[in-house]
Length: 371
Image (tube, rainbow, N blue to C red):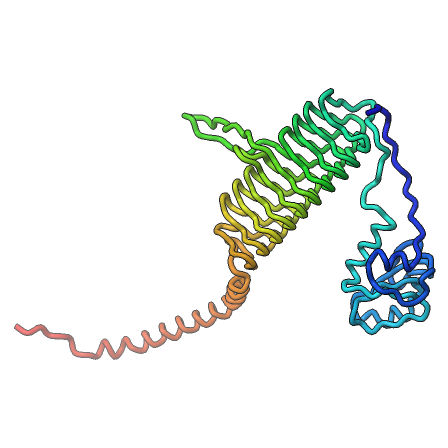
């Protein structure tokens, strides 16, 4: 593959006909099929050559007054527009996001090529349509798939692979023995394949346990800035396809994560944790080692998971407990000041009754023991 400085491909938003957008969304169009649309806009600021959306009936009046040339309208809503063409879709907000992608790609595209400052091993494989930016390092046996983009200062270790159409932002470190699927997006500062935290006590010191496993990442995974995924101690750490990982997330060795999981900022997963498909862990949630979070479970922010979480359960708190139990407990805590006042009143009443009882006890004849 020739070594030449990759250049950014200038992106000019296309001009799309209304019927082309409807066809892309596979939805029916009512109105001017030939209306030219040059981009998206908010409902109250849209012009005749722009597209907007209506996902709630409370915006019907605004839609009627909007100057938008094309409206994506949620099915079941009674929305009329004076001049706009209308495309009725099952989920207007989702459809609008898809249309945004037609006008504005999520990542800058670069011309294929290997920058002259990149260091690529002779036996590494870089697809002719891939892009390798300045000061990247690709070690022996590594492979970069078709259409993949590595921006500057990306490290790909020995035997690792980046799948087709992957996009790797600057300063990402992919250690050896890592497999990354197609269309994955890795933000700056991500480290994949770092050693797991494994030590044994030998005498008066901690001795490192070799971490010889790898990391396997499925397709369509996004990993946020400065997140770290450790390699397995023996087997692999696994991230399922479609999973989305926010910034500053830590995933320890041998964790197994299912498909379409959401891990939000600063989540921490200890070693050998398993997460079922479609689970959601909110910000700063933590899971202790060797536990299982069931499919579709939801872990509230800053929760500490200390036991297995069944499928579909919503938990919150530290330690994490059933959300309904947590809410009931919180309500009880709110009642504590009033309960304390009542208890103080009862203690005062008991003290008063005891004081009144003392003179009676003093007048009573003393017990006499029979001779």
